[in-house]
Amino acid sequence: MNLFRRVMRWFFLLLGIVAGLATAVAAFFARRLIHPPRQRLWGAPGDLGLAYEDIQFPAQDGIRLSGWFIPAKADSVRDGATVILLHGWPWNRLGLTADDIVSGLDGSKPVDLLRLALALHRDGYHLLMFDLRNHGESAAAEPVTFGWQEANDLLGALTYLNGRTEVNPNRIGAVGFSMGANAILYALPQTELIKAAVAVQPTSPNVYARRYGADILGPLGKAVTPLTELMYQAAGGLRFGAMQPAFPAAGAGQTPVLFVQGDGDRWGSPQDVAEMAARTPQAHGPLLTESVHRFDGYQYVIDHPETVTAFFEEQLV
Image 1 (cartoon, helix red, strand yellow):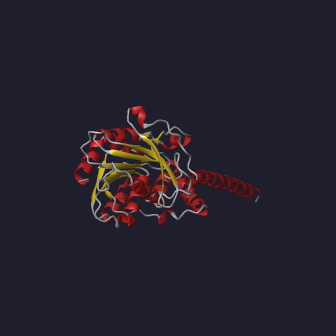
Image 2 (cartoon, rainbow, N blue to C red):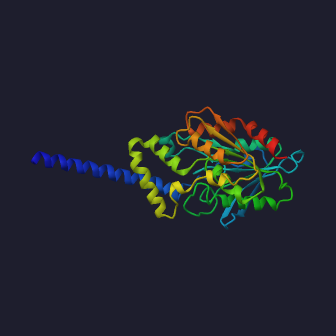
Image 3 (cartoon, rainbow, N blue to C red):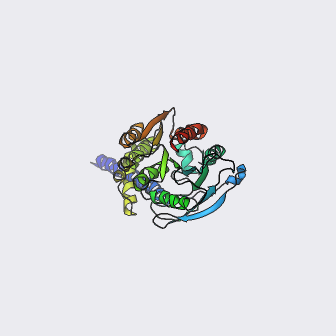
């Protein structure tokens, strides 16, 4: 009996340690969803010799957003064509530095959106780069909703561009990465101003949470993920399963959307993106790229900007 009691005592002690660890990890990740760490801007378009304006404008629901407008060269033949770049979570308008402790644990890699902006500018486009709510220098509106409420930011950006005389409102495109891609899908049923879009690795939050947890936490992920979701909901967030970009994608109308997805994405899912594309009336792709990590899919677009420019050259007419 004494041995049995000792065994049970150790069992419950270990169980308590595991439960405490799972709760602590869940609280850490929930905080990143509710109040994501803000990256300071580490550069500007002027570093690459690009003229630009510091701008602010309201999201459709009034949240203050900060960004840059980069005008095309005076001799551009694009007739006012403009591209909006939308970043992922928890990036900023420049991309991701991947220099924090989480990046060291999960293998995140830097993402340089300014490189893509430079390529698009050289091809003759005006550019709008801005921080989504809760990121960079834009105002807070917690929690992050992975594209659902962030669509209001994109709609606000469209209103802003519509007020600029050098922008042709019939030739506006958008490129979104991850959460930014989701925001495009949520916004498309609400506007006709986006004439073409590139969605780079959009993802359903429930798919991402499950696969991310399994990848970096192993078996512990099965306990941490639902705890994280409960904490996120307690802060005003929706159930992960209630945020499904495939549903608004069905209302994208006649806007052509090019989907890009890495075939080895351990956090997202090619099948998830294929379902979004199947529901999108004018879907192109998914263009599956060779990858061993989620960040390889992002890097493909930055390393091959001709994929984006060729699509816009064909669709922004």
